[in-house]
Amino acid sequence: MTVDTAPAAAPAEPGADACAEQLRQHFPALFSGAPKPLKLRIQADIQERAPGAFSKAALSAFLRRHTGRTGYLIALTRAAHRFDLDGAPAGEISAEHRQAAIDELARRRALQATREAALQAQRRQRAELLRAFEGSSLSMANFCALKGVAADELPGLLELARREAEERAQAAPPPRHDRPPPRARRRHGP
Image (cartoon, one colour):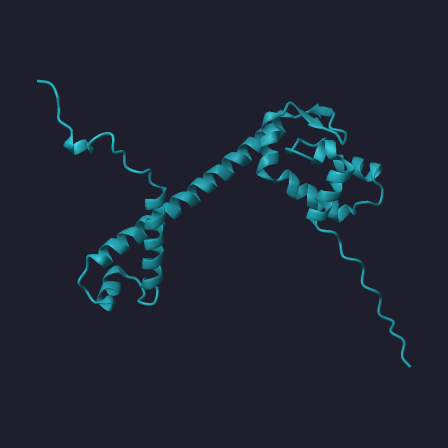
């Protein structure tokens, strides 16, 4: 008979979501509702008030994720104070920390605007491709060669362009029938 001498596996570390839920239960004044700027060195306060409830690694991971969220950064730019575990003011937010949050939010907005512009450009290109394809008498192979599109990619691009056109049509406001179209209006005056 052999004895297994392998060490038992350590229990799995709770994830950041589980840590967040435990923090809401232990400290609802700080971790429930809209994000609030956290007191500096809050991790030590949490470990002191709830000894053994949170591992250092899990708490660090949660705090890193929590303080990097857009909602938290917005709160950091708007609030006058940081808050302790009981939700009481615990020191002012330094100009350096406020500016770092403002800069990060601006970086994220610029990145989002760049992504959105790229998506809009891709949608325009697909719409132009669809219009050109529907108005073309070329064979699919010749059309693909002319437009520089792989023949196996074209059907997917055209289908996506059709869906996007349908979505735009559904999102457009219905035409107004109480006024004639702009071209049909008569000009009054000299």
